Amino acid sequence: MTARTFLPPPDGFDALTYTRSAAAAVGLSLDEAELSEVAANLGRTAGFAALVATVEGLSDTVPAPVFRPVEANSPGTDATEGRP
Amino acid sequence: MTRSVAGIAAAFADGSLKAADSVEMALENLNAVAPLGAVTAVHSERARRRAAELDRCRAAGLPAGPLAGVPFAVKNLFDVAGAVTRAGSAATDGNDPAGKDAFAIQALEAAGAILVASTNMDEFAYGFSGENAHDGDTRNPRGPWRGAGGLSAGGSSSGSAALVAAGAVPLALGTDTNGSVRVPAALSGVAGLKPTYGRLSRSGVYPFVDSLDHVGLFAASVQDLALGYDALLGLDPSDPAQARRTPAPVCPLAEDHRLRCARLGGWFSGPLHADVAEAMDAAAAALHCRGTVDLPLAEAARAAAFVLTTAEGGQRHLPTLRTRPDRYGPLVRDRLRAGALVPAAWTGDAQRLRRRLAEILAALHAGHQILIAPATPCPAFPLGTVDWDVDGVMLPIRLAIGMFTQPLTPAGLPIAVVARRGRISGLPVGVQIIGRPWHEAEVLAAARRLEAAGFRISPDCCEVTQ
Image: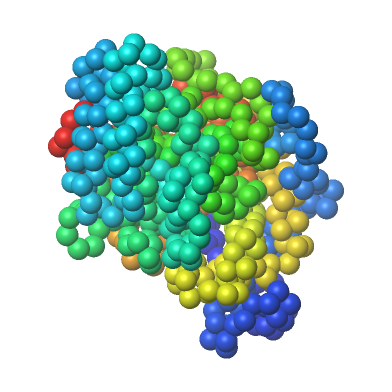
């Protein structure tokens, strides 16, 4: 298997525009130079996310974290992660 | 005399070593290896006070614990009472001092061990190289370390691994989110353990990625690793992420020759430096591996870990990124900013992939209790390196050095690393020993078999013996 360290972002993803808009939405102030650097990083993340999204049948899978209601502490089993 | 955990504890128990002398030797060692850049705080006053308590305890005939007199160090993201938890960053400078020790420190000290130092790390644990813009880089004691330059000790728990490799302390704590125990264990040539996700309490540990953070540890031998691990066990009601399972000590370590083992292929087959490839062959032979198995979705699992890491890390730091971005070093600031903007759809898919990965690995483990894989693609690289040639492939090494640890992290399995010197480079290379969830004893049994087959490198640098 060929090691792919970075993956290209999906076609049509405009990292700069998205970054500008999302940064404003969460109150992150970025000047133009910073915007470019952050967008480049987000573009890399988009590439990884796109690879994950290609995995078939993910929509039928329960996400890993399962909330546990708070209860009295007592030794026992826990099956929320992996397979004990 | 020996500088091992077991040796120091035995010497204290039989009266041939005072805790005070053990601490003084550790402090001398720390001073001797200062050029490594592995230490950010020495807790000499506290350590001497604790040693005096232990010596009084023994003089009075009272039990002092199985690790009595053993000095240890912690990555500087563990809370130490009275000190600001640095987490490798100037962004924490104005924070309040910790009100109490991290649970892991309390556990080790309850067993008689003595905290002597906090160690250098990648800023906020976001890196694999041990380079830090605020505290300087950690140098690998297996390479040249007294002059300019030097080799990466691996990260992010760089200082902890380097101190154990140098023989300055016999035991050190780290954390592992994408490989931050396993990578430095391999590059620095020590034994490392990342237990099952949820096994050890994370209370009092500066968080990075809640979904992936593990407390782990380093020692020079598997036996010492096991002794340290057992002391860290214990239920902590204040940690909601800890699994509510009865602690399962691993000592005395079993000599279990019935383990069924296999080697991971596919993603894990390359690129590999020849030293790593030889180490993998040797490990497979020593464990009588029954062939090679593929881990489907390994590359996607690595991608999922990358997405979760940047997103959760970015969210955690968003308040400070808004107000004091200048406090972050250049290697992490823009990655965290980008992470704070990741859409939920990406993290949702990553968490679903994580579940799938755990199921796939459970199926593989049904046939083989132990799987092995390289810890890194190559031995230590020079600090400051951006791109590095590994078997003819140019890799962005700060990220790629974790390419074999990162895909496994989301599954939360217990994984140990043991190392040996490469024939060509003369530098350490490591093998991951991947066990079933909650079966740390099997992982360490396999690690011990590899240790017997040459996967152990003695600490060096410190002339002081303990």
